Image (cartoon, rainbow, N blue to C red; front, top):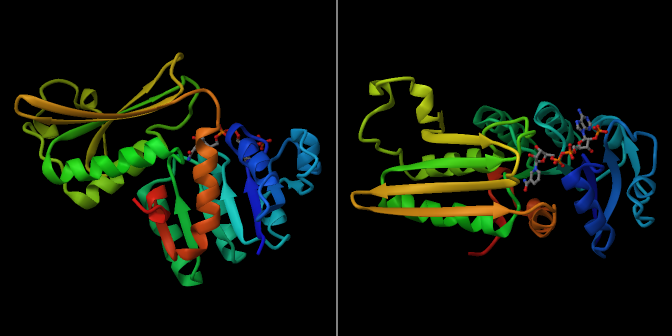
Length: 266
Ligand SMILES: NC(=O)c1ccc[n+]([C@@H]2O[C@H](COP(=O)([O-])OP(=O)(O)OC[C@H]3O[C@@H](n4cnc5c(N)ncnc54)[C@H](OP(=O)(O)O)[C@@H]3O)[C@@H](O)[C@H]2O)c1
């Protein structure tokens, strides 16, 4: 059976790499794409991949006039939520790669997805090493009650913290709340220096030239420390394999699930 896919953001850095991989996958067919600058053009002509015959549309609602099984959201934080809601209204399962959505956004998306009996798989980071970091961090948090997260990205990344850091903080909040020795309210000096509180975790976002994407979680105990870190290089390749798994498995879910391991066995 062929899975019909629509990618929002198919001309972008991450979406175009995924679209090319879909062109090579026998069980997937890209039926439509969303992006503004190249709207009205065939995706394959823009990407130099003749097997991608779907048309690019300026909005998700136009693209979803073509029936699809899975809608992939890979645009920008300001358009992501409405694209996802539109896709659910059209009866498509959704894979979310875009960062910047909040826990509240996901709660609203979850309510609609459950009403429609559809799956939404949101992965702040589709890279396998990032999925492993999330899993190992959950294990560590069961044992160690104090941790902080540092999120590294290139200087022109508009959103902070990263989707990976948000997802990590959200997942750790389901394990336990961290127990800082000095509560934030008792900080002497500017409390902002202690980072932002995201789902109960202190998150520090570094945005500088020279970084691509990385996330680090540091667990501290008296006289010992555990650091778990994921770093990705310049290409969008690390995100492709995970996104393909998500597209193939999202129909096994109902409601919002965060993290690739929702569909991985480890
Ligand atoms: N989960 C992961 O593993 C992962 C990996 C990489 C990136 N990301 C995230 O994915 C998102 C995209 O990253 P990127 O680096 O691929 O960005 P990008 O290169 O700027 O691509 C964005 C794409 O979305 C389209 N777009 C942007 N705003 C739109 C709108 N309002 N309506 C319709 N189309 C719109 C753009 O085309 P037009 O400008 O022509 O509209 C382009 O095709 C970011 O949030 C990034 O943090 C996640």
